[in-house]
Length: 356
Image 1 (cartoon, rainbow, N blue to C red):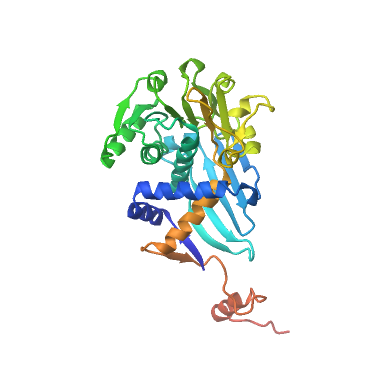
Image 2: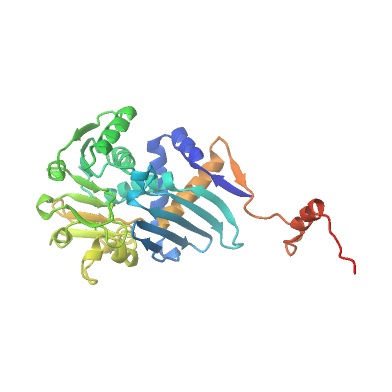
């Protein structure tokens, strides 16, 4: 039997722990794994593209455990009443090759993306940051708002989306949470939203090379959390923002980001820093309060590995409904895979012998 964690169980765990404690714990799990970066067998994710979206597989292993995530990205799905992104994942034991967990990752990916964004901002944004612009108010927005509120102390959110219904949805959900001290302002444009803020998060969905942020919008000291550009042909930042002399660009896994991140629009030799090197003290993300820091995040398999292990541990530590699925056969004789089927066939279909 294999442990199974579905959407209801994930939401139960988040509700039981509370959003702040859950995201903080998840961010801690991710940070711990990035600090042992060299332990992992890493590769860029495998992507299968179509005119309407992408389906990806994201594998990784630390030699003891192996995980992969199946994830899609289809921006036009919402017009059909479907999610833009769905995902599930598997955690397996390397020694036996047996999967130990099958889990939903649609909801969890939103949580781990937000946790990773806030974790990176802790090491890149100015410690005094209290205001953030959220450009793109769709499915990821509430998670980003919660993570930055709880982990970084953001107390003012400035919202903009070309879809007014998305912004209204975000405002409604944030109001339900009743977060003390949080001020939410709806803006009429990206330029209005980003003016004077400490942090800008871009989380748009369209699969195109867009320029959501223009060079003239960027002020000294800003931290840009660019999470919407996550596949080839999809970017959100004007290239000249990345080329600023005072800009410092941090990525998760450079070989993948060169294909999918904001830096795909720049020359292959453009210098970037991997987040693991920032944690290890090998590189600095910020040298002064006037630096412009850019987290060019596309999402990396290590973060899903961390999330799956975190969920699996909580699943067994916390009270609640635990489920298993019969994904693997349990055999008395491991060489007799057919035996169980033979018994069923014999019981249901009498053997008829042809007579000559």
